[in-house]
Amino acid sequence: MVTQRRLFPSISSLRALEALDRLGSASAVADELALTQSAVSRQLQTLEAQLGVDLIRGIANACC
Image 1 (cartoon, one colour):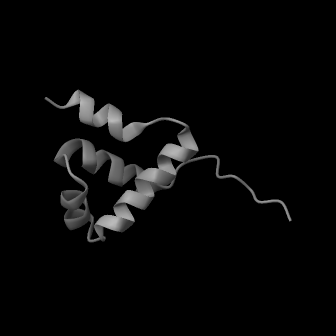
Image 2 (image 1 turned 135 degrees about the horizontal axis):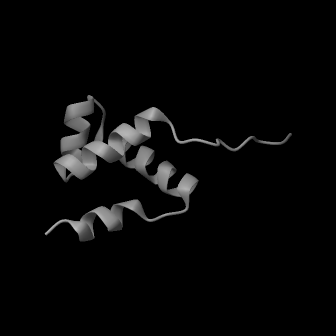
Image 3 (image 1 turned 90 degrees about the vertical axis):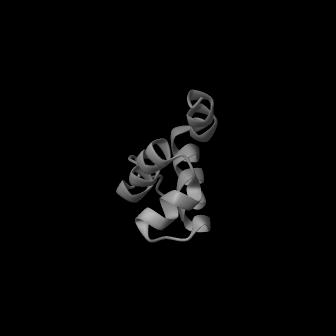
């Protein structure tokens, strides 16, 4: 059976990324989106894998 790769990231993972950029921490994102910190981390890891880019490092380096 062939698995189909998603062409576009999920809206929830994009929301998590936007909130992380704005709020600065996964726990704050989890609180805002009413998710667990683990769920936020998984969404962001999946988004990184889909895009082939290290998004978290880019956000951390952009801050401060």
